[in-house]
Image (tube, rainbow, N blue to C red):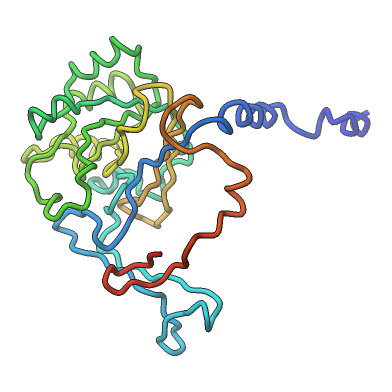
Length: 294
């Protein structure tokens, strides 16, 4: 009987798998994807306390020479990074409290969540150090409905549009998220984590928001980009990050999955996605810039 059912295809694919593949074909394959991460480069904005980073060609330990396409058939890159708190990042609680998880201990379930985006752009235009308030959160809910439990809340300030400006990370005033707003989001709405565009949660003298979050086991996203290209509600967030053993920061790739009729982002394209298209010119190492460019 079991053999007959397998031949009929009734026991070959679990119902759950069928549901996920169906959801992909109906929703995800037609969705638009928006990258919310900065590209890492030697000049990336970073807190002055961590210092600069350097990229270089990977060297053959046998002779100390860089690998070359013409000679070796491949090339690779070595990275001398001053910190794991660099660029767009997932900030684990162990960054401030060793009793909580490091980046390699973050659950895989962080990978896909509902995405909320609350804008404070208008407030920041009037006050560059404006922080998201409880009133801002409640105003968003009055317009769009309750913030879903377990979601990610991104706070849009457009600060990231200045990314790469000299001295940006040293400026004492930047948009933030207030401690009362953080407590409402986590203790009242039970979100997974929040994200912001600057490199710190707020510009208070004691970094009150970041201290409360990380010392109590919460995670946050920092250095997020392109929040002007996602809807206030209705999208999902894909989060990918490396598993450095005992890491206290995680270079992250945040990607918003937006509705199919959204005006920003790229769609799945089976013909162009694999194999990827040949570029108009090859990558070459640029000594002046310190990375490969076309």
